[in-house]
Length: 333
Image (tube, rainbow, N blue to C red; front, side):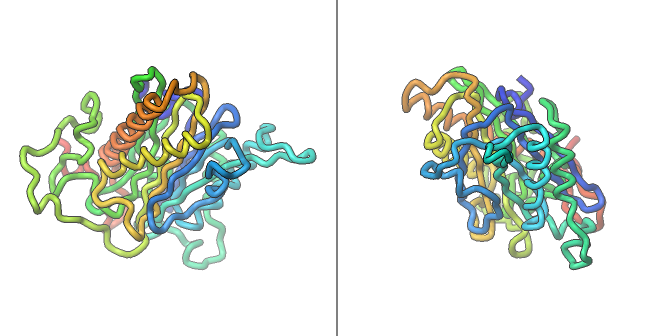
């Protein structure tokens, strides 16, 4: 176990970032068409092809999931992934054509100090198609956490955000993993200290092993918000090697949002676009009953909470004046 979403058989991850623009793209690529769904609980989402993931819709499978920075500009990233997949013969066949199915979610990282001239009207095209193509052409089982991929330009209310991942074996013996770009309106840490809200779910000191403080005060519970409207959104994918129906994948996505609620305070705000995709690669058996599905759902929430904390814990600060400090800058010893 690598403690990454790629512990789920049938899934690889690729990433690319533009250092000058302080933004990036993360691609989860499936080895075959894969059952997927989505749950959107934030008030201001930015998405592409998510409606088709609802259980009542006709399309049953996806080829990849894309997480990207760039706000609405970043939605061009799926084009780059589609081009790469079609060149490799992937996609839904229609009259000799190939149409890869690549749902996507974006976060807002336009005001983090990077050079994003295309968003200021200079006539240039944003980097997202090219970044996504590079990511899709270089997928693997190992990938960086923290300031990488879709998490490169991410921030939280108090600290630099980042790209996180975690995995676990459920009581059903099936694997569940999470991948998340943490760009929250709120905070992943308690008050002004180093401890993470997700601490009860931590495994093997993966984000510092600090636990919770002995007392959580009213001041610790005071909400801390990122300044400025619309600068938020945490986007995630949970995946399992179990064989699920589309309706069961929807339930997995909904349950995984509990992990965001355990790791971030607040979450699902009016100007967040908080989204969780869920995918089932089907390389192990179907859950035996509703209790087995509940085990997968609970594990998905746990690994997503851990992934959020890992993303913030691993992040490094952006090299621009006035940017958010990283956790390691403030608290590492």
